[in-house]
Length: 146
Image 1 (cartoon, rainbow, N blue to C red):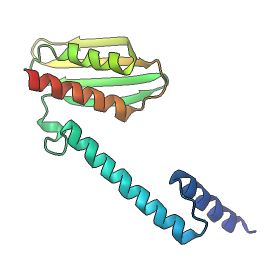
Image 2 (image 1 turned 180 degrees about the vertical axis):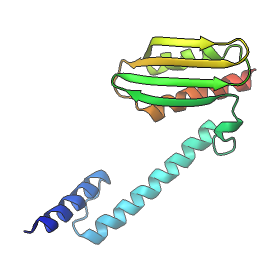
Image 3 (image 1 turned 60 degrees about the vertical axis):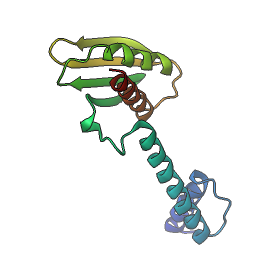
Image 4 (image 1 turned 90 degrees about the vertical axis):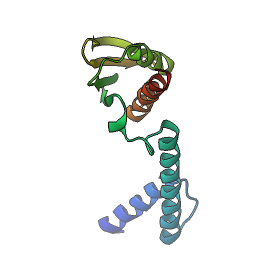
C-alpha cells in the first residue's frame, strides 16, 4: 500500500473514530461525519441560547471575558467600563463551582471593574470554553440580580 493510500486510510479511520461511526466505506463515514457536525452545531446553538449569547452578544454584556489555557489552569480576564458591585463574588463563586483554585489574582473595582485571575484546575478536566461559559453565566446571573 502506498504512503498516500495509508494516509487516506488513517484519515478515514480517525474520522470514523471521532464521529463514533460504524461505517466501513468512505462515503458512509463522510455522511456520518456530516451528521455529527450537524449535531455539534445544534448543541452549540442550544448552549448559546442557555447563556443568552444568541440574543445578547458578549459586547452587550456589562463585562468582557477572555480565558486562556495555561499549563495547569487558566488565565481569566474580566473587564467592564463601569463599577460592578458584587461581580467579583459571583465570578469567584463560579470558580469554586468548577473546582478552580485561585492561585493569583488582581482586581480593581473602583471606577471600572477589572479582574485578572489564574485559576488552577483541581480536576484537570476543564477546557477554556467551559471556564468562559461559567464566568459568562456568573456575569449574566449577577446582571439579572442587580
